[in-house]
Amino acid sequence: MSRPSIPTQHVHEGPFTGAFFDAHGIRAFPHPFRLATMAPMSARQPSVSEETETLDRTLAKNEEIAADVQDASDHLAVVATVLEKELPDNVQVDDVAQAIEHANQIEKQLARSAQALAEVNEALANQIEKRNG
Image (cartoon, rainbow, N blue to C red; front, side, top):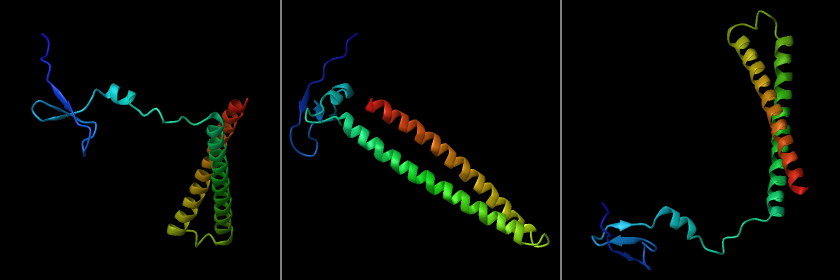
């Protein structure tokens, strides 16, 4: 059984530009595939050199972030070590002990994050090198 064809009217102006209305005045739109293929021909794809330039900037920014994370990890490790060594055992209880342990956990997480960023940066650098030939 075939569906009856409902006539539509295309609107060229106004707030619903590109919209269609059926015979009952209900707004409808073209098939999504048709919309996707209706992109303006002036839409330009970035060149390989532009993509490589963008990847280079991304890599540089990632390397800066990795260095910052590693610095934070190193500084936190120093703080935790000083607290552990300089505070007497009788002071390293309850909240102070928890704070020292928490600082150690954060330092380890930062170190893992810095390592993960370094690995991602290495993979990104390899991809850039492959693109450049």
